[in-house]
Image 1 (cartoon, rainbow, N blue to C red):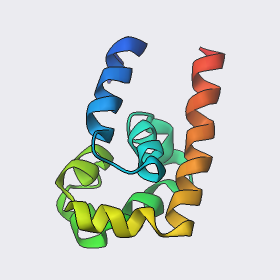
Image 2 (cartoon, rainbow, N blue to C red; image 1 turned 90 degrees about the vertical axis):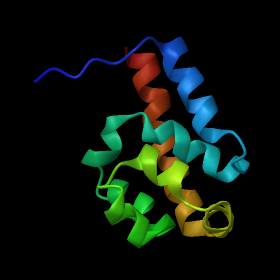
Image 3 (cartoon, one colour; image 1 turned 30 degrees about the vertical axis):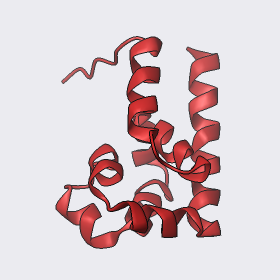
Image 4 (cartoon, helix red, strand yellow; image 1 turned 135 degrees about the horizontal axis):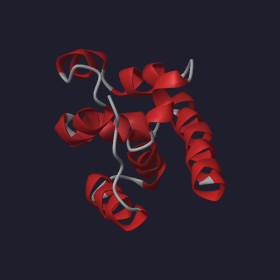
Length: 102
């Protein structure tokens, strides 16, 4: 099965929409949600699960659904959690590497 990814401009729009209303700390996770390499990282799944473990299971481990379906107060708590924010930063590094290496 081939996975097709839209243009960078399309992805940037989607990331902006997903991140709208999110704190700066969680905007990084919106970017990571569109980079499938999070799933290959040992911390990838744990990062999104840490935001809301029950919702993570209910969204069938879909990071975009996790971020859009999780209540804003829960996202605010996640944004205040240094461990989650730190994982998002390391995921952001993967996204930057992909754009340069493409």
